[in-house]
Length: 205
Image (cartoon, rainbow, N blue to C red; front, top):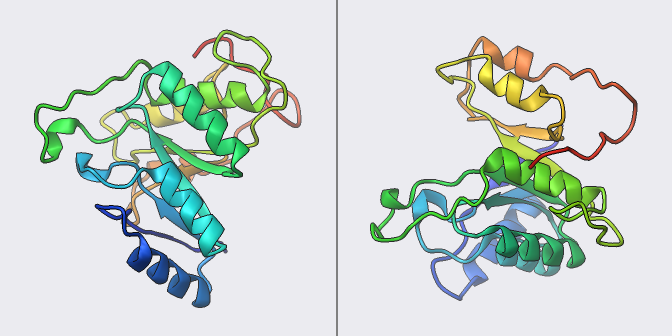
């Protein structure tokens, strides 16, 4: 069993306490740390840079949360290519909390694409293609994770999103730790694939 613990990036530029806490988690046998991206729409150190600090200075794997709330398509593409070049491999793709939840009510959300589109974007990059279908050279090598609401109003909706034809197939799902819902066992069942190995690049994002 793999054990991961979610930490919160610092509010300022001093990451020493966070790094010390993560080092303690590593000594206790934790396998990875989850790094949220602007949780509760609050201003904190970016998840990508925080993850790089942790992996380089502590030597423990990170699961980097990445949301489509704050960046346009070009910004996300640049971030994802750079993060891959720096060695980040585990990424959890999410929508992001609404800006009005945080202390900056005048902040606006971007949402050039939603979390499903972002998942397909990263899947394309893993197949060496940019959003326009142009080759980028060596592909990224992300292990893609997504967030799932097991208590959705339409309980079949998360399953349809995860297994829809032409959609990327994530390697992991992030579920609330208290989740106890009839949909949960079905969400965790392996999906059928038409061919073994990698899925084909999606046709839409």
